Length: 356
Image (tube, rainbow, N blue to C red):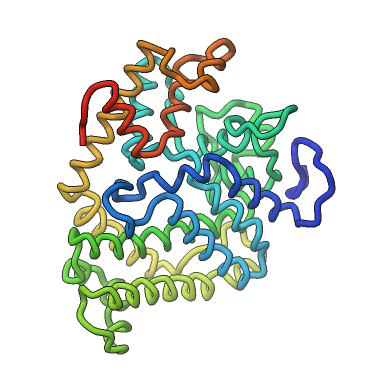
């Protein structure tokens, strides 16, 4: 198939194909639910903290900026970015890992994987048209959601997927841009949220060479104390700009010469980024306050899975009707994956009593 083609015919439209993809994604129920899905902090902990929805919007903005400067298709990058997290469960990666464990413990070796779940959301689980499932997105958007920037040959993927998308090959440059935009967005906003929450300090960040370079840029502006809102904002802005300009400097000529994997950073900066991410993991993602909340989320996913397996009549009609034609374990996993944090906690509390 050509990148802009779809698996099902559509009527003519004044929008370009990827802009139409973007609009279909934005108007999907799965996209709206991202507002109440965890990025790092559980949704109910404060209005300021990022969720999967705000993260996806930030990734989209960064991806569009990069795609524009590299003379790539901005709308394609935007569509992939907005859809890239649709398959995430409640409670972030912990929720997905727990659902994966539950399925594998019941003998389903394919388990659960959020990238493929995002693909399933837009091709199977969203029901918007009478004659087919999914949103009927273009080939390039689907490929970008499925693969991101690396060959995506996985043992759990059906053979038909490999035939359609040639999983040993890299996707479009726009998909690679989204992958790096995702990295830039979550590093910057997780630092902002971490400092705002008190789990992380700029003193902690001084262990990172990259963070020190950014702190020097902020200091030159003389914007105030390290822990005030303006300082945090300027740090995030400088970090994003530094990474975007560095990526563009590294990637422009490689894109122009059609290299296979041109989107990235110089080796020295890649090393600095890895060290900063490791610092965030140790200081923030493994902070006892985060671990406690994620443990509660893990127990909620386990409890929901167990309860629904024992009494499938608790499923909503949309999912209950699927039990006649689909595997029960997978139907229940799809239902749990679709939940927001607060819905999952409320449902679990209804079953077993309060856990948070």
